[in-house]
Image (cartoon, rainbow, N blue to C red; front, side, top):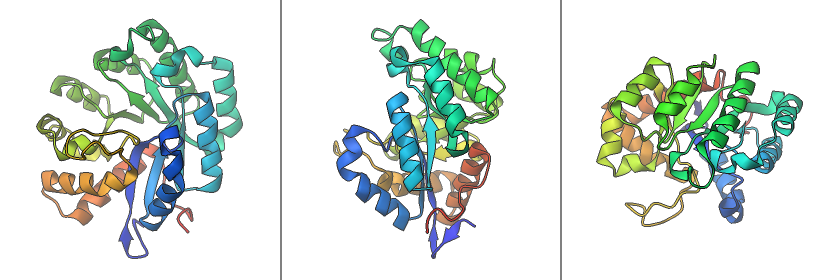
Length: 265
């Protein structure tokens, strides 16, 4: 059931709960999300944050853990350590993320290094039949080309900023796309959103991110979800309840199973 205690549940498909910037607010975020029935897909940046996310899951079952090494952190990647982490915790891991390529960061971490780490993690996701949460800034073409080489049926392209041609290519591959706070104020994001298949839409905050437009530079938290969903309901031309149900069902399809057991109690 989507409805718990008279409230409709929300899903944040991409958040970084163990980021240092959120540490002072983490207890508040967790308690607020529990009260508001918010499911969180907590993504990792490196091996250390992957382990911290697993610790978080042991305390809060409504936090779905994604382990992975971000392209910014690719030089720290150890194939042996990461595979061992997956094998030892496979029953507690919901997916592999945040992984991918970042063309803007190529001057810091060469794209060849990013690509090797991305491909290694994709191979593990394929082996263990896990969904992937993918970063693709300024590298959408390369990311989609690489993804097409793997048998991974549940791919989320988070905060997708490619053009309509790349969006269509991703949709043809069966990818999901998550949209965040920029949907509230960005005409280009809304235009791209309206080209996306309704059954492939998820919602994210990518917390912690500071937004200079509309949110006055405040660092984002999962509490921004309601604003994003409100905009999506208007763009869908559907009721809020219908929209929440669509996002919930899409999130379950992406995750490959039910989002809720007794986690929110």
